[in-house]
Structure formats: structure tokens, C-alpha cells
Image (cartoon, rainbow, N blue to C red; front, top):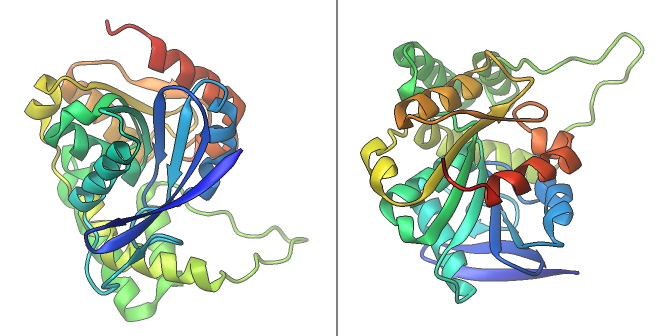
Length: 272
């Protein structure tokens, strides 16, 4: 059974969903909302109380001022508030992409709330040897969005990430136009989330010493892509290995059963 909840927080109202019973496990993305995490959540609900959530400003998590940026620090505080709303002292967290950055901020600032963080392909461009070039690409994506709109901006975003989207084949119809919600989510991401996520400088010393078990992770089919490289750089900086999960950047949605099996193993594995 899935229950739906709404939590007021400073500047926003968070939408989150709960499945299962057991230790608290939160699956979080940014800008991805809770929808694509549903198959993974259902695969884990036999052993965990699984929470999925829309980040502030995305889909059903509304913000008081849609013209203000939403920062990783705000989303980390939102995550903390979700944990404490259960009356729990801590949770395990699986964060993907910007959601992994959210988890890293919470683990650095308030490690007592996160037992294990699996940080799957956080796009921490500041850790890359070519950080200046990659951050300049982000600024170009944002300028393109402001000048030309989402279509041109997303094309540049995907090219910079190393994951250019496939076009329709010769016998295929073009994809349907985005829904109003997708349009709004895309605009909020490009205008108010992208820079904060990609420009974040993680507090490496706090992550090393804070007490949260950090598991950097990446997709088995995303090698060479920017977020995979950033995950590997995080692992190197923390002095630990990189855990490889099935699929690519969104492997949890592509292969939920296999992904859930490995995630279970990672969460119960004793630290080395």
C-alpha cells in the first residue's frame, strides 16, 4: 500500500509517498520527481519503509516563490525534515544525480540523520580535472535557456553530460510535446536548480569524518559520461571504491529489480 503525504517546510510544501515497513530508506533525485523511483521503491518495500519525494519546486512539491533558486542546502534541510517527521533519528538514503548532492550536503552538515548514503552519479563538476570547462558548459546551457528556451538548452545540456538524446528513427513519430508539468519542471531546473547542483563543492573532510557511511556509485553503462566521472572523483577523494550499479544514469528506473538487489546488498554490507 502507498500512502501520500504533504509536509510544510520553510518556503515550500513537500510531496512524498511511503511504501512498506521496516528501516527508513529515502530515494531522492533532483530534478527528478518521485515517479521514476516507483518501481525501485516497490521492489524494496518488503524490507524497508521506502520514501520517495518530489524535490521543492518540482511537480507536486510547490514553492512559495517560484522565481527564487532552490539550493542543495535547502533540499538537504527538506530531507532532514522528512526523516524527523517519522519520529526517526536517521535513515538510509539513496540519492541519484542532484539527489546524491542533496544527500552529500545532509551527510556533511548533519551526519546523524544519515546512516548510509549511496551517492549515485552526483554531478559534482568541481571535483573534475576539467572543472573549468565543464562549469562553463553549464553557464552556456543557462544562457541558452534564457535566450532560446528549453529545447535548445536541453540539447546543450545532454551534449555536455555526454548523453545526447536519441532522435526518432526514420519510421518513428517524434515524441509527444512535453506536458505543462514537464515544461514547468524543466524551466525550474534550468533556471533555478542546475547551477546550484553542478557548482556545489562538497565538504570532503566533513564527509570523511562525519560518521555517515558514504558509498559513491555509478552506472555500468555510463562510463565516460560527466556524472560517472564525477562519482569516480568523489570515490577517489574519499579514499573508497566506486560501486557499479546496473544501467546508466537512470539505471534505477531502467533495471529496478537488479538495481534493488544490489542496493539491498550495499545497505547491509559491513563497512570495510
